[in-house]
Image (cartoon, rainbow, N blue to C red; front, side):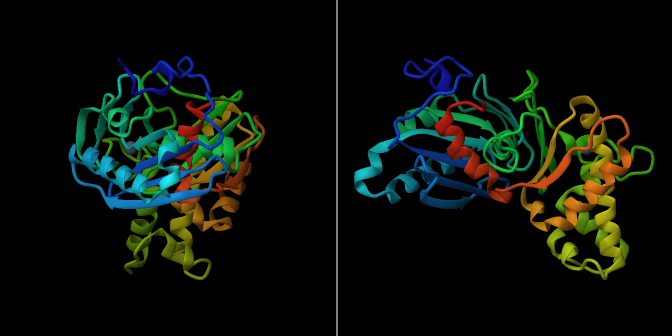
Length: 325
Ligand SMILES: [Zn+2]
């Protein structure tokens, strides 16, 4: 039986339907990144009862590490609550086939076509869903974070890469091809931009990811920095930092023009680790969109509420709700 999807297990509702757990049920979420696997167990109020992290082994061995981390989180629970785990969710990077429960590809972790099947469900004895990490992070910001109460919301998850989600008419836009919202690979400088690892030239990500902002600063100033946060900390006095941030904002604004004209979102939510830059990022992006848009209303640019924790928080919420609705 195909029990890896919450919607397809005998006790759960039809696929795509929201389902409720008992009020005292706990949910577990794992968020698998390129360097670290993080996990949490939370109750219905969102209180975190157990949390932990382990380094991500390369390749398919990462799946054993996910099980081990989950086991240790469960062992952390007080004895009287250990039997209350109701459902879990495991968020995977790269390309994820949730229908067939296959981790299709992750360049960062180095796996290809790993059949997850119902291994987690068998291991932990509760329904376990796998999902795409960014889809869940964006859903969480839309439904429970900075986008809550709005039906038409673009969430951009800014971090190592640039991607996100689109909610239109109160629904998360998904595609039969997998993830919708690859904002980072919209080419905005195709004529004179930098090569992107995807094979194109001048993608949003070549200027607006955290790594790209740091690289741009180093190229312009000749000085080393550890990351984008350090570049933002040099504002406003350092001209090279100002240029690197300007370039990132312009690339984001240009990349968003198409989706804004197509979907007329009310909000653009800046999520992910880079959103920690705060107003230094959101205010110039708001100004750049205002300057560029003529026909469609200018969406409000706001900062995400979950930051780099959107995936992990989203995972326990997704496990509780049973669907990205
Ligand atoms: Zn690209």
